[in-house]
Image (cartoon, rainbow, N blue to C red):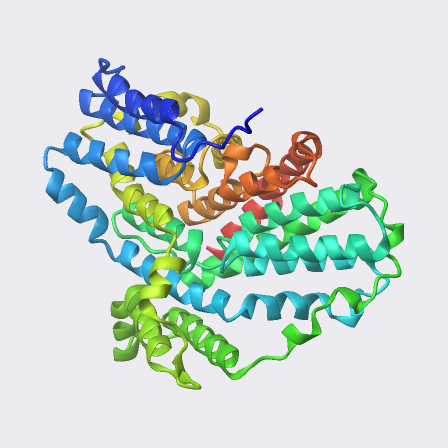
Length: 479
């Protein structure tokens, strides 16, 4: 019998449904205060959510850009506003920088440095935490690369202590890397999804900016606490046996990766300098330097870094070749999605659409006369549920306008709430459609999906309680 070959290309039926949803919902009559234009915008949103769950990121993003451009009445102006934004071009520069870090195996150095610490020997749960923390931190650069790297470390441990790669500990750690990667990708407001969240907030609040230093101080501890919560659940609630790991040594460490060459040192030094320069305006008093750095913003500073990486040569070879870095390092589907998010958010919140008015009419009776915390709890819980059904950045683009619109009514600190929503929408681990990282996790042959459906749900529930108590107090203290 001839072996069936796997079909290549996009799944046609889901592509048709994606486009049909955008068109059909857009032709329906308005509901309540939602106008005809508002229905077109809702059609785009529903189509994007469906398409990203069943097709990929690129196809529905491109369809949405075209549909929004047509709905606005000026397609060319709409496209220019999307692809001419500093956010899009800044993200391209950041991807090129991240490619340099991956190409020079800087991530390997950090991963092996973390697991080589002597304090971890004989402490299996502390070792497990270190693995997930390392995965979370490296996800700032690339969650996919971080997960693959630490999966190899996890499996090396299994082989060393002679336990099955599908053992409860291994399955829990595979889930943990996905959970930790989802959090790590938003640690910095000028890298990866953190950059997108930050620019979503600015676009949808008419120019308000989250202080990057406060963002980091609020975000990182809450993210690390989420990892600690998962480890504690594994130990005391799920009661996963780790007795075989008690005698683990540094045999799983790649000692060669711990020796930095000159190219790696240059890349690390330049990236650290870039991060410092991006944070400096947060602590500088009003002066010419602060004005200049703010004016350069991420786009200018990242562009300078890319130029340096192209110009600096070691042994006659540049750190990066721009054509290679742009073709291999830039995740174009994510660029397309970023180009879409700001105009979609503006369309959702525009007075012409009437969507915010409908949401306000529904939510006002629910939150009227109640503490602000009730509104925050509803928003966070809805965000966590929706992000496991669809892409987290799209859910963020839907939730931020609601927060901004309701801020005065319920008297909330929008900076604090957006931080909580950013974390909640990145608890995307319980379904394959939740995020690319979740899709990778479910495709791992050593992973058992029942872990995500049972223990994963328990993890998200406990983390939500944490966000709505300690997290709520912490973010309001910072902002």
